Length: 267
Image (tube, rainbow, N blue to C red; front, side, top):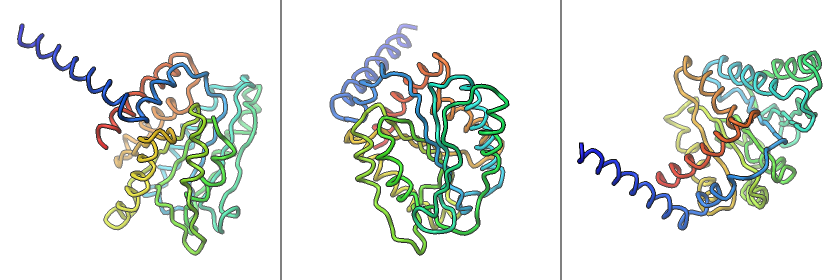
């Protein structure tokens, strides 16, 4: 029994030392600790990749739309909350590839919500043509939403197709100047992982490098490949990304600190 207690104490001390070391050596971890007491986020942007190449199953997009609708429903009557939803990866280049779906304060009642929000979200459909142009959507939206909460649902491949490639590092740095803002990426395995997985990993590594330097707050969450697990996963992470209650806000702050530590340890 004593050995067990000693072992537990050792592990707790080691964990404490690790956290303190990361706090002083990894600016991304330090930033999350400093943001524990930030005000509640009331401004949300949701970008949905509809290029079609990311959806192994049509149910993936449906899971996201259903859970996003359920999440935003929690804010009915709270006019302090505003949100914008846009799709990207539509046919065309740059501005033509982005379509605004919703941009408004949270509706006053449920009937308004159904007509102005829920129906428009459910009408979002994927296209079989068109590159996702992740670089363009980040370059376009981030400088305009400094200090806000951005949720991106995409395969993170940053395909440009026949369009001019767009660099997003400068926009990420601009967005990251206000530490109250953060970006949450929800992403599936690429449709052709044997070909595209390295491209996806390259984007994640590049942005995580900026996170570790404290230049931006960004988090990555990989959707389960198993369809039966996907809905619950999306629901859980949208609750963290768009918290509505005091408990959800506290849980989100704690989760972000843990996620930053795990990401720093993984490198």
